[in-house]
Image (cartoon, rainbow, N blue to C red; front, side, top):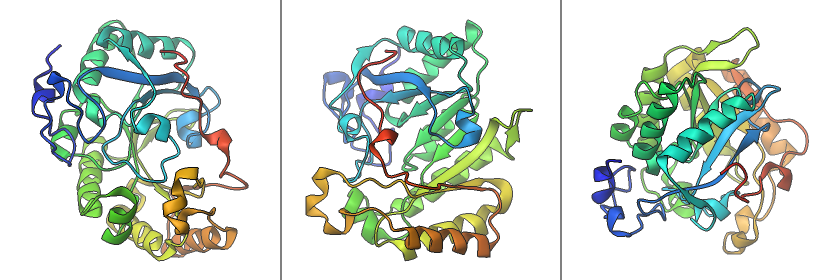
Length: 300
């Protein structure tokens, strides 16, 4: 395959210029080898993504953002996964379709876009018809997203922060909001209005996720307000309360607790008062280890 985009890598907004073809790892912790940690049906996405049949998730190793609180840190830090070929990735897509998946769900895929588009080309020539979901931190390059035009049907990005302070503190990322907002604008321009099939499973559109962090309620309100005032009902907003404290957060006392019911309820009520109708909320005890899959190479 053509590895030229990995030679002086600027696939993500970090633009670290690593020569990944020479074995150097970018900020994403990845070189030019394609590393996948898990490929299986996943039932814990939004209802219109998972449905009853499950979403065909493919978890890629590495991440360009690297949040200190990442619940998938085993793979985001590049510690887990198996090297595979583009041909094998295309087979995985077809195997997930054969298992009845509602879609192909690419999790943290941005640093592997050249591999992924080639694998999708192969799979589609062989008959793959499922919609493709691009499941992302929101920290994406518009130029890289443009390469996905015609490949991705559903964008599922985060919009994690409005202010620079938490973005720098928790993700070592200055200007996160402006970069992610521009990326989301590109995503919406590619997909247009949401489309669902007769079962209520999304076939096209954008769902923007926001994970509420402890002590960041006012920043969360600014995120929701921005999304609704900018896009209204053209997108869906998923307000998540599943933040799970991890052992490595000992350096960040603010993060060493779950989001309280009162904090989350206030944010949801704020969204409702704004007029948000196309949205998802989480109910009950969601900050559990059950939301973190085993990255044991299943399906790879």
